[in-house]
Image (cartoon, rainbow, N blue to C red):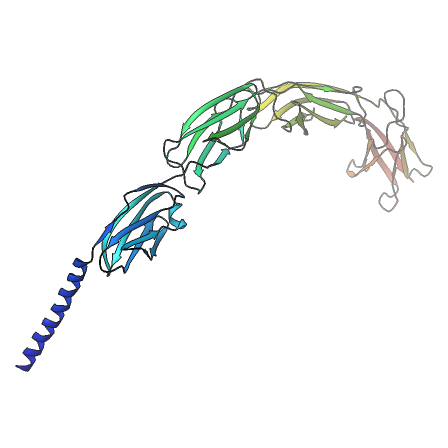
Length: 405
């Protein structure tokens, strides 16, 4: 029986406490005195409330950046809350709730709009290099913000201009999803496109996109040389015509052109040059023997030239072969070129040596100096006996029987 009486006593005690709390909340009233719900970013915002009996209330603010709790300033039955700059500078919705005794007694929303009195423009242009031809383009992206870095409202007008040569084009764009953009297509001419934008009297920096020539088209080649003799000394110069793209633009400086040369034996040589003002040049030494070349020019994977033929006449028509007293030194020369002048140093000379059974023993090579070339045949390698030797200079071969004693 005592236990039952004790339980009823606890129920009555807690029930009375709950009734007291409800009565306090009902007897303490808070009324919002602020009717303005829309502000501009940076505006001073004060929320005021009237109250009865108790002023122990807290205001909770929430926006996209976070939340905070504010303590009021109490003035003659009025509570005043000053919204801090960390909240009144950010555009968007700001939710507030007045908390008393752990309950929300009043709540509402504030709409903070971007402040267009001061505008900043972030502008981006890319790619900064495009190809002529009305297919490639650069994109101009413009993100206008207010002085507190809030994106301006949708529908805000942005003026954009771009200039190429003497033509200036203007466009009116509208902000959507925080930014606005415009594709600027390349003209058919190479050059520079200048782009700028403005919003609310604020002008962006000038941006540049370079329009490079499009892919090269086929071209022609030619050559220059001082003479047509295969002296192994002079240079022949290969040169392209002015190379254009599809739209008549001279291709970019530095474009690599390869000149592929095929000789009469099918061997391939290559010379390379880069374009300056659309023309590429490459140089190659004359051959050392009578030769006929076929030359073609290529821009790899893009364009090619016609094929031209170049012939070289032999510069050396004859020469003498001499032997030393012991016949161990073979002397070649003097070597005279097409005007009976001594050939420049460095003319290749080769010597083939066969034994009496026509077995090739060795191939010796040297180059001329002062028009002469020499080969030594030491007895350690070439014992006494009969040999056949063949000398070759500038494609001209002479064979001689040699008896070493």
